Length: 342
Image (cartoon, rainbow, N blue to C red):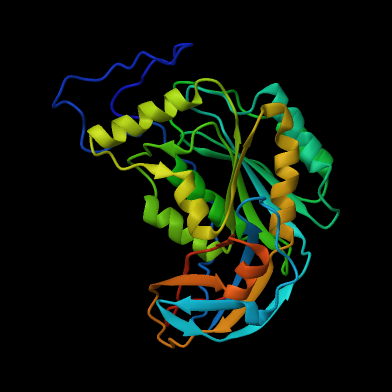
């Protein structure tokens, strides 16, 4: 967090030093250059073919609802009903990019979380691939996509030290993650960015991508954003401080929750030592989603953002009770002259 100041991370997290009224800069100052993201060709979804994943869970029990058919869903794009032409529920390999927050008052990657992460990696299937990034004011790739769990374990041992006075620049981190995610090798698998952090909101950084750039890059990558939040004492206080600053000084903030909602991901929180179970549940949810494809009734290749709404039929609610449909909220249409992926 950078407001032209640093606030002291005292054990009780109760001391906040602010500059005199009127001296707060309009933007946030970034004094450490962000790493240059890997270069890659831009990826745009073809406007005529849209493929999305969806998870259906019971609200009361959080149990996954399986066995649904194509006719159990109704899909709308910008309020216009679409015809679902592709449908299935397959267990697909996953490409997991782990992003570890190394800034802020609280260190989310304690020894317990480190051990839980290593245990969770052992639950992945041989076809799954994993990459590891760390971020604060810049983004550092510790290990590229690999099926070798030992390489990831060795990369975890090289995790940068936690900087309690550093800024965790969410927008830059998400943008870099989306750019790198295009290197995922699983052509038919599902792509997921899992951020391990103690704070779901950050005041961002002045330089580099803004929230719109980060969102668009993540949508174009086809990745789902998820969060693993270790339950830590002091987390609510830090979150309250950041939220208070954003509200009082009208400072734009970047939130993990927003991208999770946009891309149809989930956030799990548990005790640090138990995060391996949350990690396993998260991957199982992603692996066993419904795959839904349709030909858009809007044939314009204008590069605009299209809103999506997926609903289940009343008969599903009658048999399953109230359910939640977890899926992405929209996509970027293709644009004439832009390079596209099949």
